[in-house]
Image (cartoon, rainbow, N blue to C red; front, side, top):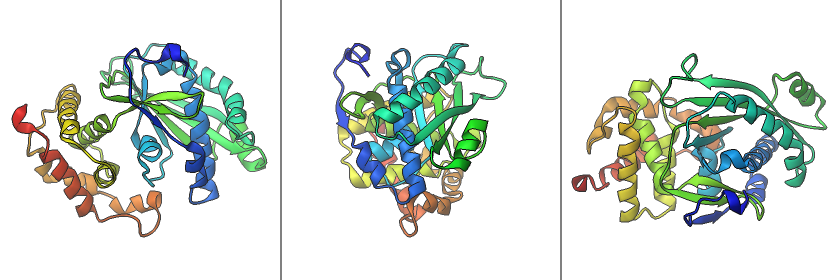
Length: 302
């Protein structure tokens, strides 16, 4: 991201070593996935018309900035603005035109990528939704793997990376994630990230979702970073703003609702596939860390 596209305010900068992150992958398939993530992130970071209003969040940010071992095939991006009708085809065109060059530049010349399906979300309500999104499937292949290349060229099957782009989601607490000496992308700060995850947990019931990854991610942040009183003020402020925009009004005891914890614990053991055998804490440990943090927020001052 060039200096011209950076925000005018000075942001904290976090330098990440993507090459070490790739080399630390537990197996060749995971290494190939992380190479695809590296290429896709750097490609998106080169789009000046998007990157100034776009920020990284989710599991990839957890891995790059906070050392989370959770392996995810989703890149989650938020754009502060609403979409326009040209966004889906423009994003597809920009990515496809950039992949080969970025792959070579990032030291992955044997990797081939191509955008497959782009879905407008929610289905049938993209234009009128308050919080629309795009679900982009990025196919990737090793150029020496004939089967993978055939599927990629056919536009179907084979390894896939998900690029999930949410619109109309402004963030206030941001940091600058330096992907390399030449490339940076905006990302949620820790407090914004935690507020987003707490909001997602509260929204499980109306959206009929199960968010097992969020208690794990919050536990990881509690265990491996220092969350200050200043952070807690920002977390609560952002949680309330994010929740109320979706018709949810959080209170001190909101996480005591057993349906929220039930949904968060659903299919908990499947997280072991993302972490490795024997590396998944018990749900009750992660849930306690989540509730303790939530209830320690300065509710009385709001």
